[in-house]
Image (cartoon, rainbow, N blue to C red; front, side, top):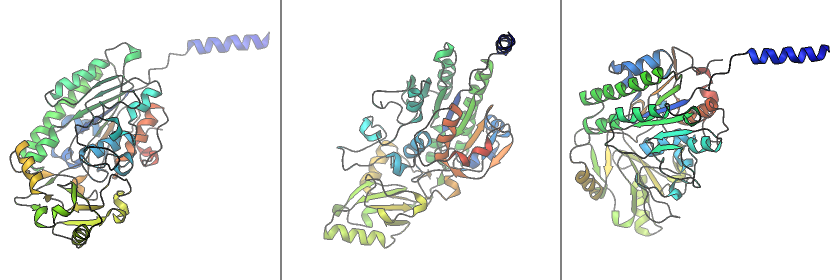
Amino acid sequence: MKQLLQIIALLVLVAARPALADPAPVILISIDGFRADYLDRGVSPALSALAAGGVRAQRMIPSYPSVTFPNHTALVTGLTPDHNGIINNAFDDPALPGHFTMASRDEAWWAQSTPIWITAERAGLPTGVEFWPGVSVAHQGLRPGLWHDFDRMVAPEARVDTVLGWFDLPPAQRPRLALLYFEAVDSAGHSFGPDSPEVNRTVSAIDAAVARLVAGLKARGVAANLIVVADHGMAPVGEGQLVMLDDVIDLAAVHVAFDGSVVGIDVPATPAGEAVRRKLLAHPPHMQCWNKAEVPARLGYGTNPRVPAVVCMVEAGWLVMTRESYQRGQKAYPGVERGAHGYDIADPRMGALFVANGPAFRAGLTIAPFPNVDVYPLMTHLLGISGVPGDGQLSDLAPILKP
């Protein structure tokens, strides 16, 4: 009888407990090209408020090369470009036909890594992705439950409203993981330079979109863990700081896989090819070149078969291009490029934004620089799922979490 009464008392106690709140959703926001120190310009009150009430980093260190697609992939896979397979915004693969570009949708280009939305879906968590590199690519037939491919014509406010609309769905359909992407700050940085009033105005406009998201979540009673990041920073490009690769090497003897702020060159085993290799390794103006196996270890780049035979890191503020590539770019985007990225990840100007705010995070904390691949294990921890082993470490960001 005594045992029965104890069981009844325990059942009454459990029944009397308030129901556990739904787990806080994780919302990852990328503001492409938002250099870490833009946050200190006094033109982004919403982001500054999130940082003051949460966590910010002095800067987040991008993966090399510090360009868009490799780093957006690093953020959602926890793998550096050398391991996630997206080694640049454009590249070749000796095992695949054609050429990868930012419009490539064939799964074969993306198959070396698995984005977190696929891992979450496999774990039974609803996901929503509003514009993120690679979102339209199926992984063994699986995509996010809710998603839209990138469309530059969709205004920032409309993107926010789409994400907010997902949280108006029935509870079982609301995302536990949502991703949102804005490109305008990066575009302004390229066109006008990072120190321009146009960049400041664009930062303010995207900040207003973030404020709209925060207000919309509050109105819906959604206490989300917000993580706001960038893929890289931006350095000014001075007038005339352009090297034509045609004037440096014999282009007919090699294949230039990519150029700009990072150069990759496939070198055939011919006398002419080897002559080009020697010239590149002799430190031509405004770039430092290595055989792929000799790229400095701190850059974590050069082991992937997609990385060309010779890799050249361009001096920050300079561009190295073939004439054909430059002319093609001028037809698509007339004008002088005033800002660029892709440079040495140790350069503070390549440092990216990191702000975190929500029920899982401490308040009023500024942390030292850390690598962007750490964001992935942070998110899998917050979601309570097992991620794919990678290059990031949760221990780097453990101090930002509440006990």
